[in-house]
Image (cartoon, rainbow, N blue to C red):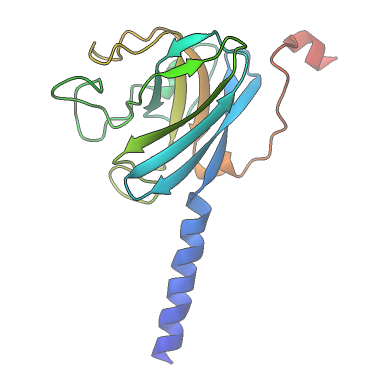
Length: 189
């Protein structure tokens, strides 16, 4: 009987873990248009983030995980600072860094699209100090400019251009993407 209970508990724990990896989140621009998605998967060395989006300015852009699970436009300041549960400095090139939420720059192609895969080393999707799903969750932000890797507090990456909430609630929603080339007035008609 005890072994049956043990097996049942193992299955329950395994099923709960499946709900957390992979998770898919929607990315939104400052006009609240869905411009793409990110898929987060827990790996042995951190969380892999595969991002696909459109409607962005070509060139290099900073991308970070921020501390709050809020993406209130148009400035996305509601996302708070970079996610930093360990109290480090900012920047992948900083000798005392980096924030847990610091990621390498991503390149948007000439047609305004991005298709990139990054790893957030040390992060998890399970419970714990470095979980991206802590409390209500966190958010993924794409910035206007590239991150210089050392400037405090955010790498001089400029405005926040796109945001996606990293939470189990957000991952379970099934929003149809909108067309970022439409104006909000056209969508309301």
